[in-house]
Amino acid sequence: MKIVKQLHFWTGLIFVLIFLLTGQYMDLKYDHLQGMEDGPRMIFRSGHIYLLFAAVLNLVSGVYLEPLTGIRRTIQLLVSIIFLFLPWILLAGFFHEPHLEALVRPWSRIALYGTFGAALMLAVLGFKRS
Image (cartoon, rainbow, N blue to C red; front, side, top):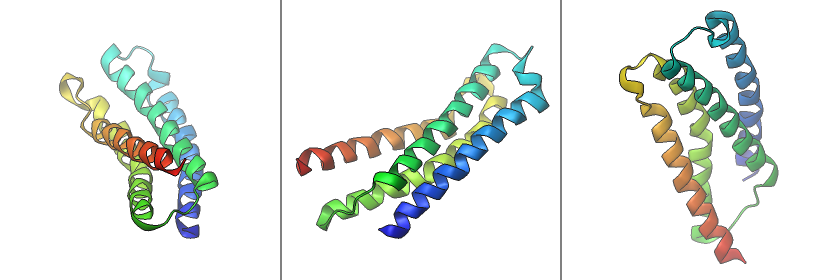
């Protein structure tokens, strides 16, 4: 479990840096989204914030993750896998979704539903622990 904690921590730290770099990308490539249509602009900005969200989830997991036992450990590992893949999926969405028609968000949708499911699993684990 120590390796999983370290993976979470470093993934979180790397994605805080990526969050900062994507802000610079929007500034330098798209003049901080000035003059862009509202739809793509909204998708860029929300995708940018989603990256910070995923980074913070991983940083917190890297600091506070405590190993569980039995089936609870298996569920905890599944949640960790979701949290570790989450920022990569959101990063793909950040670059692809603003250019899609009809404001669809396939990458972000997968990541956010996965986060919701993982959060429910963590809530069940926490409830049974008390």
